Image 1: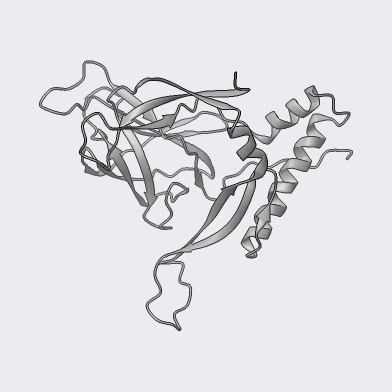
Image 2: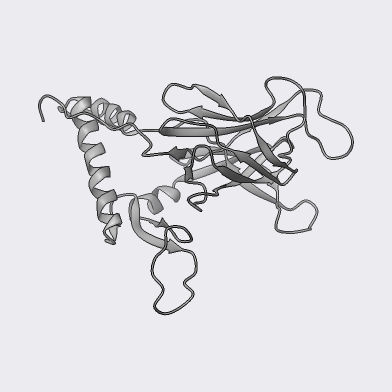
Length: 251
């Protein structure tokens, strides 16, 4: 019996026309943060206080991020991180232009995680309900994908069954702040199609947000009896993302 397991749901494979061809996606129902890791370390028997452990983990994250931003390759227990550049350069002398180029991070799992995967089972629980599915979110201002949101600027949402249909107040595109769970609706949808939405990002404060889509859309002429919803599994960043830990009184 495997030491680790998680549930997965099956979705129609959008890359093929073959009937009965599916892809699997993990069912993500929780988020683990450094504070959670610190609590688990403490429960394992560490003599350090949780706030001290959290501070060290947060500071390590800052140091690793700074190293990647300097072009260094960062290797830790989770894997290897290396900055990458997206966008084309029109000549051999072209310079980096934030208007058309963006920075991201490539990741390769490390030995510890690869070994854990050999002890992991995947429980395929069912075929997902045919409701809205968010595939990727592109911020029009920063040109980043599944990363940033720019307030008062458009973003493009790609996926399936996304068209916003229905008159209930619960229907629409919403942004849920990760720390206090405050929900901000999107008031302007520029393009409203089953496979692609273009929406104007509200005036969101800095922080991490989960995108939610709720709709009565169904293929064909009928609508679903009840609204169906989906939350994007990747947290999106507005501004600096906020957060961070204060230095503990004693280290």
